[in-house]
Image 1: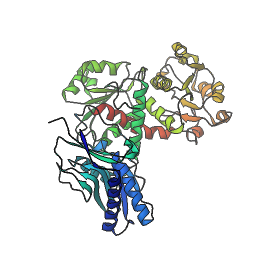
Image 2: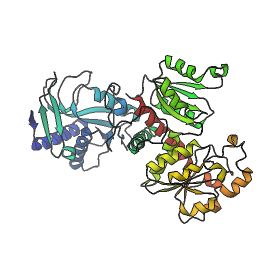
Image 3: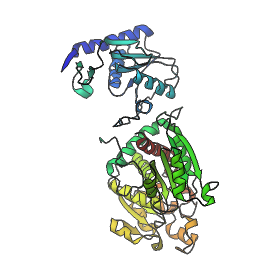
Image 4: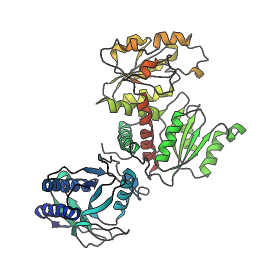
Length: 179
Length: 308
């Protein structure tokens, strides 16, 4: 059983709004670098970067982060996630980095991503942009730019669908069977 | 490619290893190579795991390569070599292994002069076992890094013509390479003195040559083995100079080929014996690239076996 909370049109409006918020905060895009967390955070990062490029008429530096090696739940998992490559071709040192992910939940993914970023360079600042904040944080982490806040129960599941992998842009709220 | 897990919890050899496993290791190694180019070449993945390197035979390259790979994955590392250990006091391998096990070791990397030692260890201790060379049997991580290096250079390994040159009989590198390359679809041949080529190779569909000049026009890659001077007490060939005359890979010989031939060598090189210095340092030599890739490939193996 699942309900659609965001449809295709709202999806693209939200991306535009996030791009504008980021630009407003930073008074432009000169110092910015965008990094998306694989897999959907990466596609979101590309969309936001594309928006910013269109608005500011510049090319945004963009990179992809694979956090597999930094996870705190690698042990004890039955099937290990497939390791993919981190692809950040620009120097993140002294840049204002916008870290992008699809859903902010426990905060553990972001914690891993921060550690991974610090191993690659020393950014001036790192801010977090997420499409959905569903609550239930287990670590002191908060997002700087949020697409939509969706209060959830632990049993529910939030699914961000994206054209690149899922064929459509939408956000679904699923009623879980566990608990 | 969907597999995310190796089919075995040990790496003993490439004979019979499924193609999917080899591909998974090569694919994973790509991610680790990226890490080796970062300012901080370390990830926390194997934090809290302990790895023992048991080297019953001398080794510089392989031991350092494994140790770097282990440390870059943040594992705790203990090194053990025969000199200065209880083996000198007459302790058996079984006792040594059991004692190490009692110290709660997660993974054992072993090199031993007796073929089958890693296999034997899997039966007496619980840790994951990685073969770092056992006698004349196999040296799987060397072959994997050779294959990885070739895969970086060539778009496909299918039908790639690779000739392994040298002492095939005593070479675990040759054996692992033959199994691994054949699994990946390459056309493997060997070249060396008749005394140093095992007869059974023909059954594996491998072409055998006894003169390097017969090979050079028809291959893409020469994997030149080290003449193991320490294993040549049996009089397998008359002299080092004669070996060089028939099998030495030199610039003059390579110039007879229509297209440049890629050169691999597992090291250490006997310069101007199996390989002339200008070829070893030449533009088609991937020898140092192999060493760099060795760390990434070993990280991949340690990661895939070590995370449970």
